[in-house]
Image 1 (tube, rainbow, N blue to C red):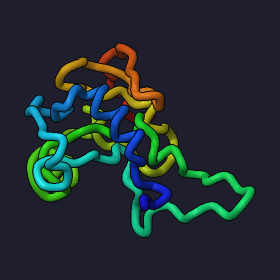
Image 2 (image 1 turned 90 degrees about the vertical axis):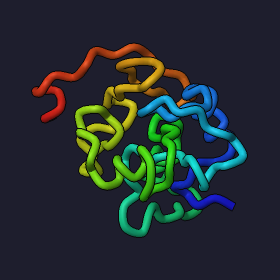
Image 3 (image 1 turned 60 degrees about the vertical axis):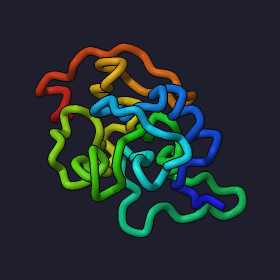
Length: 142
C-alpha cells in the first residue's frame, strides 16, 4: 500500500512512459525491475518532514498534488546516489527544475524542467509535457 504522498503504480507508469525509461537528468537507460536499486522516482517538490497527512473522510488533501505525475521524474540512483543523490544534496541548480520550493508559491506543474530527452518542458499531471521556454532570472525568483 502506498502512502498519500507516494506515487501510485499507475502514476509511476505515466512517468516511466513520459521519461521513456531514462533518467530525466543524464539520460541513462533504466531497468524497470530495478526500481529502488538503480533508479527511483524523484519528488520535485519534496514531501518534507513527515510527508503528507491522510485526509479525513470528506476532506481534500491540501498537498495531494505531491503524488501526481508533474511532481515526479525518473532519476538514476537513490536519494543518496546517482542523479537522485545529486538533486537531494543540492548539487543541481534549482533553475533546472528538478527541485521545487515547498513554500507553495509555485507548484510543480508551473515550474519548467530541463529534461534530458525533451529539453525545457512543463510537466502535466496526466503524464504528458509541453515545451517551455528556459526560465530567466526573474521567473526563477518568483
